[in-house]
Amino acid sequence: NVANTIGRMADHFNATDIQLSVFVSGNPIGGLFGAISAGFLADRYGRTMVMKLNVLPMALGCILMSTSDHIFQLLAGRIIMGFAVGIGSGLTPIFLAEVSPISIRGLIGMLYGATLTVGILVSYLLSMPQVIGTTCIGWRLFFSFPILPAIYQTVILVFCPDTPQYLARFDTAAASRALSVYRMKNDEEDEELCGLSSTPTVEPLSIWTLLKDPGHRLALMLGIGMHCTQQLSAINAVLSYTPEIFAAAKVGSPVAATVATGTVNVLVTIIAAPLIDRLGRRLIMWGGLAMMAIAYAGLAITQTCTEDLSWQCSGAWTEGAAIAAVFLFIAGFAGGAGSIPWLLVGEIFTDEARGVGSSICTAVNWSCSLLVLLTFDSIKNALHPYTFFFYMAIVLFFLVFTLLFLPETRQKTVLQIRQELKAQAGKACLPVIF
Image (cartoon, rainbow, N blue to C red; front, side, top):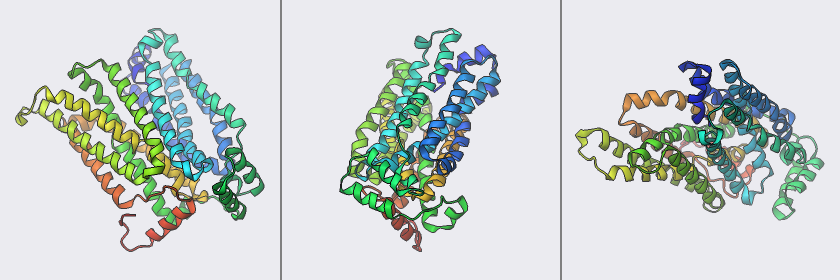
């Protein structure tokens, strides 16, 4: 999160508007290319190997940004760091899905989303002027900080074998040993181990082969749809509007607004995590989108009442209603669209399709993130004060998509999910609720 450093970079490097735009969008630009390559690299060299080597582009990006004396060095570092983040975002859900027991696979997947929200909040706090000061040394230290968690991850992975599913392609005995490292033996794990022992050697699928299979094609459509849901719901639109809402209501400061929304994001994700394996993915995703649609309706109405006098509904009530709508939106997003798409990628693709499927879905995620980043100001200016009605329509569209297409994957093996998707893809009328 570089929001607090934009002004500093503009002053220090005398940057143009275009250069600042590249600085802000450099992370999703690099992330897009990292996501595209993540699955293919993981299928060729292994999950843990690629995750360990990913410390190299992260370190290079940190070094370039923290030592930059020219704006182009800063931008190059930002994009390279984004490339490393893109690889991590593509591989982490795969790794977690392949080492997690079925009984808590949802919980582990949701905790990944929780760590993302924690990271965003921490990065915002660390970049505050009260923390990094006003001298060059402060922002240089801030840009070097990401190397610390990257090194920590690399050291931990040195002691971790690759995932049992990946190793089973070449050596079922090694897969058996890996399974015993990652979790204690019980009936569920014994059954999975037997499955690994009897799994024939399979080669990772190419994009063309994946697209030719109806079941994999449907899985890809679902994965892309869920990741589009996450980014096109425009969480950043709400977050960028939040300080203005808090200021109008005379509640705290922009910093307090960001900390409050970030805290709610983290807490709701943590609360939803243990429920995901009890209530299921469909219900929580559907409920979260419904909350987001209601919140957008609230934001749209309060903003229009405040700024369009023809509605004749302005008043002090709009301030409190807007704050309530923001927190409702954050809660709905954190429990559903913020985490579940990452979880589903590891569940709806079989072992041989997971690498390429994850790469495509994650690349779509980064592409949509970049699209929202580049278009939000234009949409806001063109539709103001009715901007949030537009985003409400998008959320409602994905709510219908979720109801029609999203299968329930709770407590199901990947093979069971694959069989259900294959059967569903063969139906003449595809949009049938699972």
